[in-house]
Image (cartoon, rainbow, N blue to C red; front, side, top):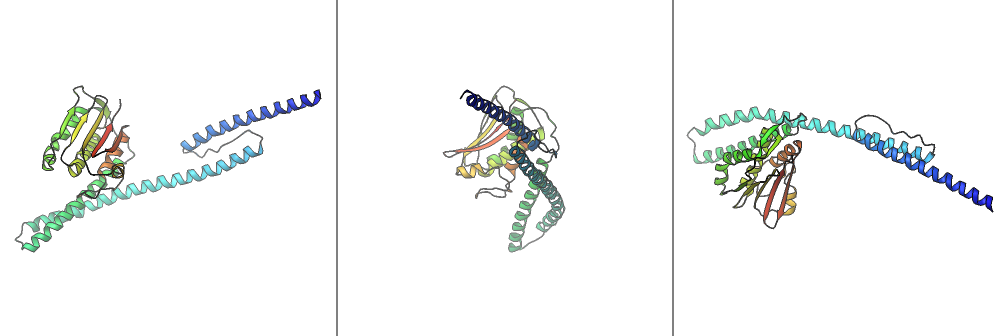
Length: 290
């Protein structure tokens, strides 16, 4: 009886030690897997375990890891080629559009019949829309470029005030009298000045198109910039505002890239941007932390 108990105890101890060893191997494999997924190397997972099941699992993970790496390389290559194609397309469209605009301007100076004036007005509208789309495509490709954005100390207070001054005419033409609340403390962040200006311009341009009668702008000492206005958007529409090429039904002359560019540039500089809809209020919020 005593021998049986000792044997049983020894077996339990062996099983416990083996279980602890397997747990250690599994923990080590998990860490290797996380590192392999994040890196772009061809390193394979390895295990010193003599357990057949553990070795089979390791081989299966290596196969899945190889597939994942191959798909990621294909995605990155396709994404790079798409960006290059968009940049080249936008650049190639600029030249003929400039020529069309030039000849159209000459045509508008001629004596035209009423019908001809109406036709040229339609052509002008479509040409301007095409130019806007081309410029936005070009800016979008630049915003997604892999080059590091140069940084410097930028005062958010001054940047917001300058953006408001440059858009004052457009805002008043849209029937908007902005309510502005900017903190007195200077908020300095390490940002790219040109990118920040582009972000603010795109947000204000969006407000000119969509704001319905009011616009409230606010800058806090924590580096949060918010723009609020009445809107008839739904929460679903608000959640999609930063999607590429998305426009709400009331858009006029919009490429659907302005807010997408704003999000890309904000995130590249370590900030966050969001849109939320509460009751009839749409709020776009940007946060640049220290």
